[in-house]
Amino acid sequence: MRTALIACFVLVWSFSCQAAEIAKPNFVVILADDLGYSDLGCYGSEIDTPNLDRLAEAGVRFTQFYNTGRCWPTRAALMTGYYAPQVGRDKLPGEPKLVTGNRTTWAKLLPERLAPLGYKSYHSGKWHIDSSPVASGFFRSYQLEDHDRYFYPQHVRVDDKRVARVERGTNYYTTTAIADRAIEHLKHHAATSPDAPFMSYVAFLAPHFPLHAPERDIAKYRDRYQVGWDRVRGERYAKQRELNLIDCELSDPEQEVGPPYDFPKALDTLGPGEVNRPLPWDQLTAEQQEFQAAKMAVHAAMVDHIDQQVGQIIAQLKDMGAFENTVIMFLSDNGASAEIMVRGDGHDPAAPPGSAGSYLCLGPGWSNCSNTPFRRHKTWVHEGGIATPMIVHWPAGIENGGELLTTPAHVVDVVPTLLELAGADDFKPEVPWEGMSLASLLAGDSAAEQAMKSRTIWWLHEGNRAMRRGDMKLVADNDDKDWSLYDMSVDRDESTDLSTGEVEMSEELAEEWQSYVDRFRQKLENSQRIGEKSSR
Image 1 (tube, rainbow, N blue to C red):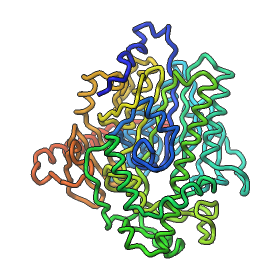
Image 2: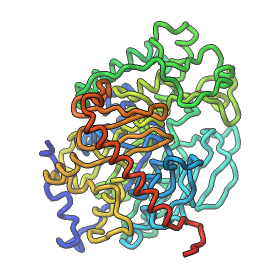
Image 3: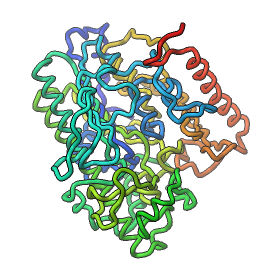
Image 4: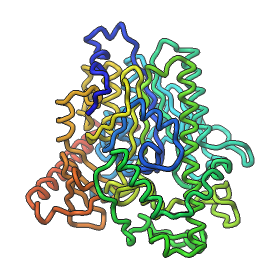
């Protein structure tokens, strides 16, 4: 399945095999926000993403890579190697708060794990983790915690210190600024620590709402989406089949499923063009079709602009001679969002869609399209909420790429993977990782592939819960008392519930799911939290 991968992908990096003679790889981890599974060209989209497509062509693409279904749990898992509820960054059943507070002291972030191996780590973009970047081991940080304004953010920190807000009317755009700061960090590293390996964590806010983008990017897509979400979704599905990304049917749009949270006043503010259900396109009024097509044009522009900035980061890596030995990972924190709300400075109906005066959200119609071919959206743990594109590119370790990796994997796998590639072969954390290193899988190790195919992956967020073991996935949303069971080998669209015919397996998986909860709760009750004085 992976004839194009160098067989010694990992072995050459083993520090028991002459690693002292080989430079450690650098790492660039790029995280998009609310990007759907099909939003990149190399995952089926019509949106122009040439830079990411080239990374996929020369690297590998995962077809079954998972996040947690929501922004902050994914970031906690991505940076710690543990599930967010396990370390106190999302709630377990029966707990009153949505985010329960600071991490446990044993759940250190990736930069703290990499520092003893000689790495300097840099952060640019969204944070949404407890503590702060520099306090958590990053050498430099550009932190944007204003999630409501792309053109003039009010809450910006540099190296953990508040700086002046961005004024209105400048040429500032968040996606560009995040990439510019990441490039600035890379230049600083090349000038001051040229012999040290680095890790750059680039956390874009886009394409998370509000839908804001430069006018020149929006203009490129202004007329593209007037054909409607039904047609675009069908076109993406056809392309995915052609690319051999998926082998399932196209899921039901679920017309009764709208946003996960109800904000009726937002619909009044947004006006008659807004639609909070994925209705057939031909059932919409002309005004609704125009409004919806304009929203998707902005979403596409935001994705396009991410790709442009990825291209700038790649150019910097090449300029500093680091591109060949840099492992680049690109993924999303959750699926596309069906949310509809108005926050920040409100929405001006007279403002052009995508401009600073507007406040628009993608909504369930286009979210369903972005998550093609899967069911549901961000916050749910059905496939539409948790399936992410995942591209891994490393010229020094992957030769003649373009391969598709079909083995299920999860964001909790990133920390163990990067630590193994960095040479921490014998490192054992205080609490065993929930994730598994992907290094051997990427190397084409058949035993590793089989182990990962039969593994268990666990989800919980806001009562939405799931367990996948091998090809079988047990899932329920927060309104369901009963579980549904699906065979992921043939039914990733989650259309055929097997639970009534496979009662024993359903009960077994449900018990195993609960065992995770019990184990996590017991450990949390006996763990100190960051910033908490020990009473033990």
